[in-house]
Image (tube, rainbow, N blue to C red; front, side, top):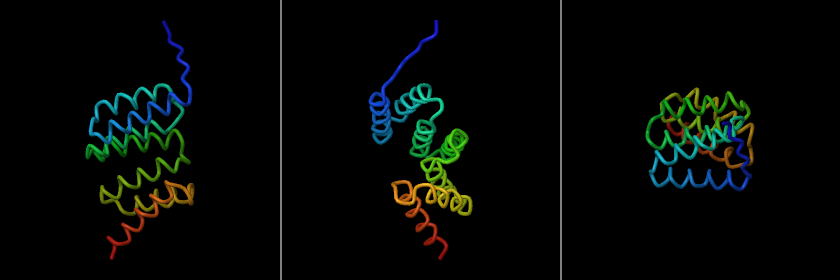
Length: 131
């Protein structure tokens, strides 16, 4: 039996918020379950994949986080959200040049938005490290 579940934007937003709350409360397994469910509801969206990466990042598993971000970029190569988070993981993975590439791309894609602001802050951090 195949299920055909129609979910509203509000329901998806609620699930994403619940996943973020679980992640921030360090209830990582619950966050993973929620974001995995959202990913199955939105297979053509990079957003739940990036969210899964943020959970792995919060757990300290940079390799798994980067794999999620790279998968997100395969889904949407123009995602500032995925580029900035991959850049962040690369900063902490001590891969500064690769980080700069993704942070620059995030800034190009979202120059005045939240992802652009995050990219600017991380680039400034890298600049301070380089001194």
